[in-house]
Image 1 (cartoon, one colour):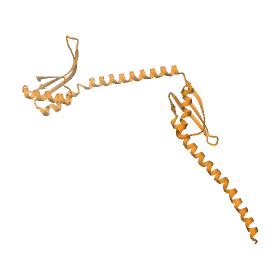
Image 2 (tube, one colour; image 1 turned 135 degrees about the horizontal axis):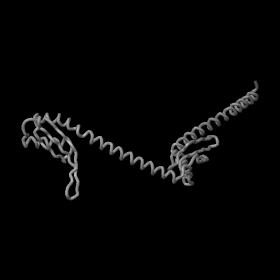
Image 3 (tube, one colour; image 1 turned 60 degrees about the vertical axis):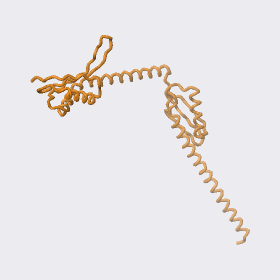
Image 4 (spheres, rainbow, N blue to C red; image 1 turned 45 degrees about the vertical axis):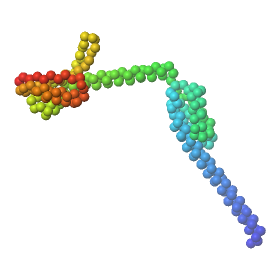
Length: 221
């Protein structure tokens, strides 16, 4: 085969290869750009899901045309809100046309009234829980005497009974205070002063309070 003809054939083959590769390279480049755009868009969308009192309801993207559509609900979108949402695209090096729409809007005054109402309800619930805990504490407080009795008999085996109650102290200068009264009954004889002091100090540590008045009495059978 003449060399001139071989050269012509090689040129045709090279041309065919080049014409085949160019579209593949171009499509590969477009695919990479599309993936980068989608990745940046997802990060951007996650960042603008909540803007003040506005919430992202839905969104769509068109990677080919580089368009992002965002639909928000909540209070009415202001121009400043839209500007803020659009500007955040720069944080992700995202170049796109961003369309922002209002899905549904809550009147700002109505929204604020609902927020205030929810705050009041939350406050009332907290107060009710506080009162409930106080009532539970008052209800269960006398039962503490049984636990104290079991522990006190280890300290002094002459102790036979125990009672406990929380009460107010009213003073003539219109000042009120609280105290815990503990009544300890003994079987046969009075406990010595040293023994009483030991029990009183133990009760203060056990009840984690210094406002305690302890009375020792002889139990009657």
